[in-house]
Image (cartoon, rainbow, N blue to C red; front, side, top):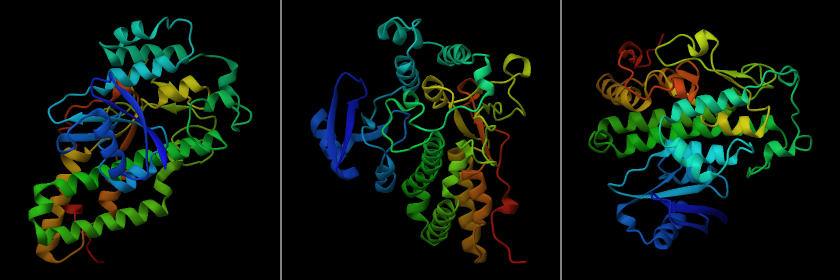
Length: 334
């Protein structure tokens, strides 16, 4: 059994509960919050809907779950940044109430300012920052993890992000009218997701993207990450091209701020890739060929289509010009 925290959308109630399954926690949460379970949804603070048992089991103890009734709105941005700021030990942050009020508007600008405060130009940035938990226990403060090194923790955090793309995509697919009604296409979709799972396991869910000890990581050897710019830009244009930078290995505060950076799909996952998968399954069923798993795998889970971006550069609008290539939907034998 693990312990978790639950709250409602208004966040005016918070309770601790224990459970060993998604159904168990969801049922207890609805009872504790006095919510109708038929109209309730359980999600994490970043808005990820939790409706998959495998994904639920990957979440650490003391994860906070938001219970939302149908029709309720929940803005995660301000609360996310509020929690980040509240966790920062900085004399300029006077009271949590003032911080909350400060963050209610223009969130991206405020996080830009906070990041610049943490971006201190000193010799320590050029040195190899301590890795072991025993050497820098403050960095691990507040974390529910058994990781012995910073690299191990960051590796697992990246794995969680990649896993979430798998679970979100599979959940969106299974709930769709297309999947429910198109029985001939369903087996092709099931097969490609089985292949996704096998390859993700083989590739350790690409956790190395955040691991500074891995030469294929997205940071340099001391752990500094650079923003790759908005989806339609080749570089980050912040500060006349200098670009946003952060080293989450440097301090606990930097680690917290890095959690607001995004691995953004250039070709959008929900708006573009999922519909393309549906179209690919139709094509596959008509000509009796397999879906090109590698093409869609790269789009969903790899840096072929993922860009690491600062929250300021994360454009959530529609990526109109970023499309999938129908010529690559199916697997053709050579």
